Length: 109
Image (cartoon, rainbow, N blue to C red; front, side):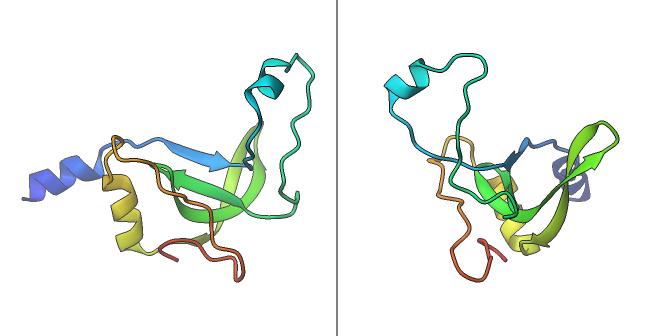
């Protein structure tokens, strides 16, 4: 059992920091050229979402780390919610991971 837990904890999972999202018509996407601007319906001072398996597990703000971007985590979901996110199958249909409006909460928070 201990070996299984150790193996699970050493697995790598991809994470995504979502700046924003919107829907566009295919025709609009096909008209993009280098230099095109895509406006996102999100204020620049709103927190960014940290996703694992298309599920929001934390929110935070963008920071500069040396010459790279980073995320300063401001709120993070419960351990059970994070375990559920990392253990969910990639074959499952993605759930809507957008944090609910209002108190700045998110699933598992």
